[in-house]
Image (cartoon, rainbow, N blue to C red):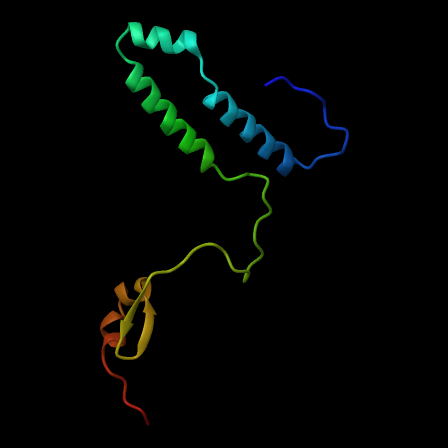
Length: 110
């Protein structure tokens, strides 16, 4: 792909990084017949393509370092696994702790 036009608008670091990531993925997807031919001749084309696939997945999963951090108390993407106890759902982290046995017992209502 040829660069057709530079961008006139001011872009944020977040937008520039996302565009760079997209260009990197394009370069990984673009067939390189010379490189693949060398890999074929050296008997490692399947390994080359396997490494390429892993790098593509790695780049896809890279978070943008310019993404704003969440403020304390805001919801994030972490989902804490839970377990049902006689007293309701409780996080697995809390259940594994020193008070785990306490939460597994049926609590008396007063």
